[in-house]
Length: 190
Image 1 (cartoon, rainbow, N blue to C red):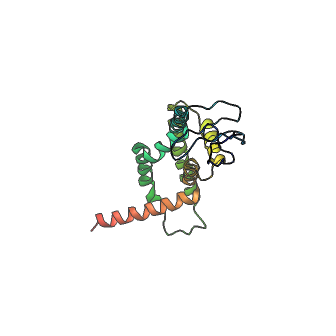
Image 2: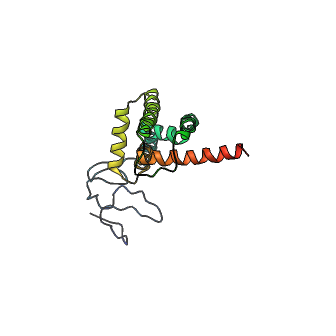
Image 3: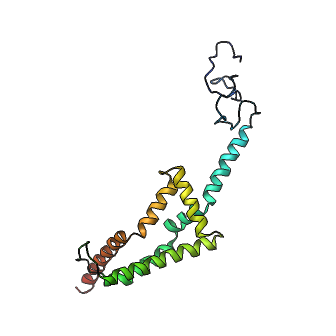
């Protein structure tokens, strides 16, 4: 393996580095199982930099077009989705007693929770199907993204979506909505 005079060869550097005044070309072959910069191995020709940029853009486009990304935008940004829930919560908040302890709730609240979950899951399923996918594909993609990186935006979105369907979170939301309802009612009757 040869190097340029006065240039130190770094371990695991790629022979396909592009020369520049700050970074002379290295000639030592990649010893890793694939070059992270050019995705090539020791005996493979370098891929042009345009391909690397194009691959990154393709990966970014694929991520933005993934069903998980689309559902995330729908969940967090679509006003019709949030308005549907706001209307449902406003309609049902008066049925909640905000003074009840968190230990025991009437059976009626379980039925209300099931109604909420059915609405939530139905809206998501309808959206996913309109986008040409399935809930199975959505959950599989979400699971894969979470397994790849537990701190990814997809994993966080999954946790938030799951928390939305948690009974305790549901009850906190409904109690708070009832408190807000009571405040509005008091101000109307003044």
